[in-house]
Length: 328
Image (cartoon, rainbow, N blue to C red):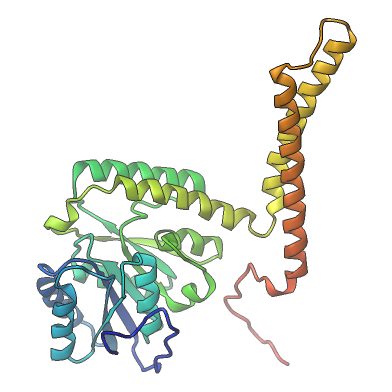
């Protein structure tokens, strides 16, 4: 792969016999990448299964890419790819997945410095039958404010999804390739891969990974958590209502329409009984607007249902894990 290759174009790597692939996402980590690479290689030396190491640079503006070029050219089994610009972790992960040849994937990002040996240990849980294993940073060594925000975000995620996860945004994940084949993710939804995978029936587990001291994990990410809170709303909507949008839009629309109709009926009775005129009253305008918005939302929900019905045979919201004694 050359430095100028555009990773937005489909990649068709030859599937070698790699048992697992380690994907490391980097962004402006020039000062730490050499030391981290030594730690990763030392941890990989303990594994006898065929494996590969892939670095994906998310358009770093420092000398991270030069470091990765030096590493990949001096060592066999190490691949490096660079995005033309900063597209975000989900895009960098997708690029790494396209390049990877393993049927089991482990990825982590350099924005949180973790012990590579602990991250690799998550693969043992995959071997034991789990489909997705989340690395839980323990102990946490990033900023106190970031830990508070992260704890709040984890609680919100668990409350809205019914799961019991301790570090959704850890940036450390081991999973089977088939999970990514069946679970769509885009934008920044990679942070919610465990949530999306659980909705598809995959087994989710957690494992502790030690977080190491480092200057680049001391940043505070309140903006990121605000964005991901909005992403969480998207995940809940897509996982619960993408196949039945009328259940969501119809309920909200019917509620608005009923409130609007109730207001207008009240004003009509008010006028009939001679309590006064209703022309120009703000409540008349409010009732009419709510009623119209409600009808529109129900109509949009019905239209969405018609579109889904038209493509119903193409939509598969289930995964078959195993078939026994099936004969043609």
